[in-house]
Image (tube, rainbow, N blue to C red; front, side, top):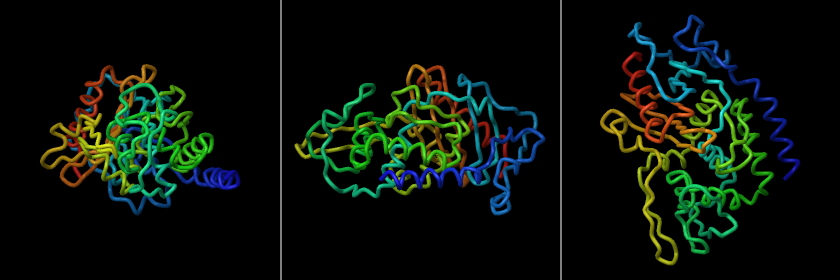
Length: 306
């Protein structure tokens, strides 16, 4: 295992230079191509055009925000996008990606045990009661269950240290240079990132076919071997908002909160065939993080033309 991890770290070091250095606000005079690898810029779609030249964004309670056009990678709006902040349960996107990298059989039956328990938030699954691995994954992503997430790391068959190393290695490979993980669920304030970095993990999560099927679910019902059944409502409240109706679709998203982080949210929203990645960090309240994200997305779709 250790030689494999060393190989991964060397790969990360070699690949990290392939990713773009932090760019500037799309509204600045600097070309948007400066935010993209020169070798692939010509292959990407043209960025949207700002058609409302008098609109400069919206006021948010979040001190760190970013809006990115998903197809081109163009940055449409930023406010302190490189501030390094605690991110809470947005951590779970990376945990799940690393877990899925181990190619688990999601239809296998497992049990969550007392040793998996992590305080904070709700524990949806009963201990020592058979449940499919797929349902443990749903409890983690949809309900942001810390204990279910810790169980996923255990089911990977990696040691706790090796799992964290894999998380940090994957962050480096994705070009998330300001991101660091010290726990798998996000309860530790040592898990830090930036709004800019989180647009990259959001894109990777949305591109994963398993995560792409689970993240848009507003509710899941899980039944365990004993017959115990629980309904889990998504922590992502945009799934039941107007931004998930008609021509709008919430494709991916993850909430996060611990006192040191404030209320955080990363989401990928489509409208009329175009998608935006929106990240807000440190919003003032649970509801304001969704208000901030909705406002930024609505502003961008109104202000830019594809």
